[in-house]
Amino acid sequence: MLQENLSNFILKAIRNNWKTKALADYNGKSYTYGDVAGYIIHLHTRFEMYGIQPGDKIALLGKNSAHWAITYLAVITYGAVVVPILPDFKPGDVHHIVNHSESRLLLAADALFENLEPEKMEKIKGSVSLNDFSILADGVAGSLSDKAEAVEDLYQEKYPFGTQSDNFFLKPVLNEHLAIISYTSGTTGFTKGVMLPHNSLVANIVYANKNMPLDPGDSIVSFLPLAHAYGCAFEFLWPFTLGCHITFLTKTPSPQIIVKAFREIKPRLVLAVPLIIEKIYKKQVMPVINKPVMHGLLNTPLLKTFIQKRIKQKLVNVFGGNFHEVVIGGAPLNAEVERFLKKIGFPYSIGYGMTECGPLISYANSAKTRLGSSGKVVDTLELKIQSDDPQNITGEILVRGENLMMGYYKNKEATEKAIDKDGWFHTGDLGLIDGDGYLYIKGRSKSMILGPSGQNIYPEELEARLNNLPFIQESLVVEKNGKLEALIYPDYEETDLKGLDEEALKEMLNLYKTNINNSFPEYMSLSSIKIVPEEFAKTPKKSIKRFLYTMNQ
Image 1 (cartoon, rainbow, N blue to C red):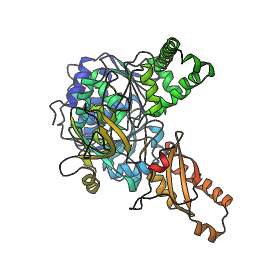
Image 2: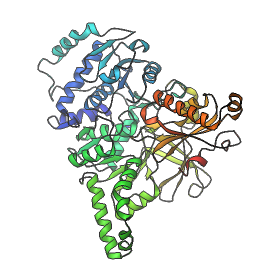
Image 3: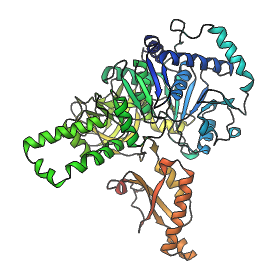
Image 4: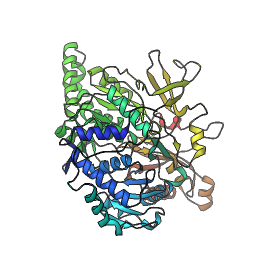
């Protein structure tokens, strides 16, 4: 276990920056570090009056916002466990996660709560509004309504003159204690709640402090989903402990909104998923370099240097013009795009991580990044390639150390499959490592697809639904041009039996697409369903060789 403590990091940041801006909603309300302290104490008082004990789970459902961040801080410093839920999840998935996690309290954005059925969440004492922290509903397992006045009385008793920097304290929560249960999916058959201890969060913060370019008072834009480890750790938690000013884009952001916010806020560090970078490259750079006149100019050495500098400055301005570097993570970056960024000297870096490591596994800053590499393993982890020749023969990436999860909640079988008896976590990803310790990811044996705003998409969920429908023998969901496409091999025996011709089958598939898109979050929507003429190629174990259908998409 590490010596540093998360509650102490938060306490120090708040006391040292009491009157400094801490959190803000984009084009909305702003909060100082002192304001945040007051809210934390208010929420601690509520938890106490509601009968919440340290170690109890508290579910958190909402889009990125200052109140989401304040609630997160209050829960983990109280010693309770945060269960963040993606706002895109359907009501049935939210009910399932709240129940599976055994959450005792739900804090939810009003608009999202309206779609829920509180009586289906069996163990919660009640639901509280993320908008204003009022009580939304009493729960099946208790009542909050009769405690509203008592909360205010208890707060006044403890803090008659309000929360001040000299009377604000946080009791340290031990590093071995559970901090977060992060669900990678909401669907019943795919539920995996990643259990991250305080130690994992601390390990990520300590590493970032040593290796990432950010200082107290710097501005940050948070647009990656806070319910995911990547955005939560590096767009919110670590910058907060440094004393930075974080602005949350409270709506699902398009690239246009993100760019507009960058230009206004001018962040000092930018986090991004490859899809954002690739879209900006496609729209901002390719139209310029693909002009016929440019081909000749780029073959002239002096003009080539001048043009590349102009393009670099154009890209720098897109991200606000004030950043140290753009950190890219969450999925592999398109090789052509990376080569271009390297060629023009654009300050980017690439990291590699997984929720199970809270999330960081490897990283190298922009001065040290190498083409095609995801950097070096962080100093709180060990990494090895399961290969006889790790520099030349691809093997599975294995890690162990301080960042690692405690396991999957109530899923011993999945935990034992992921973490071997020697403590090595099997990532399911394939890679090489060079003589200098740089990691090169060569393939994702897992099939996860990264959504447009950083959401994890597990195609098996969609495939399971498709495969259960009439006239479909097997299916495969792939990403094509940033959209999801379902490839299906029809059950021709059934179509012949029912007298369905190809046009009738296509009409049926369009109906399936509409029904499926109404059942899953918007980021999992299928753009099309395409018929393939023959069965999918399979391994000896009869698993579809997914890579054959995804590598050229």
